[in-house]
Length: 71
Image (cartoon, rainbow, N blue to C red; front, side, top):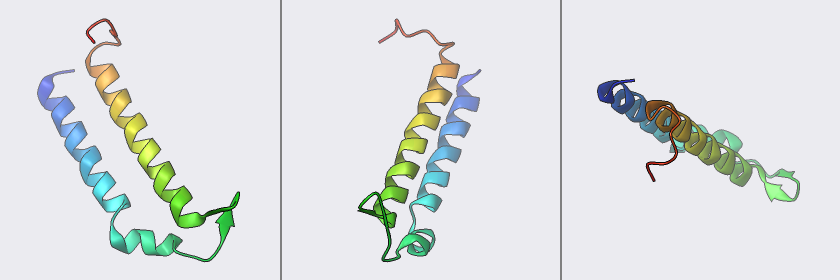
């Protein structure tokens, strides 16, 4: 995968994160209910955050060819 393709994917992921963690969409989950004792909004924010980290790790892992010795 070339550098420009990786950059485009990461920028698209950033934009998706901004949209998903933005004000209008998060108000949908601002309800007085809980999941496992935690407010729904907090759970949704954590899941989106974890998914963004996982997606960025997958993009970068694929870009480096799965080689972890470069760290």
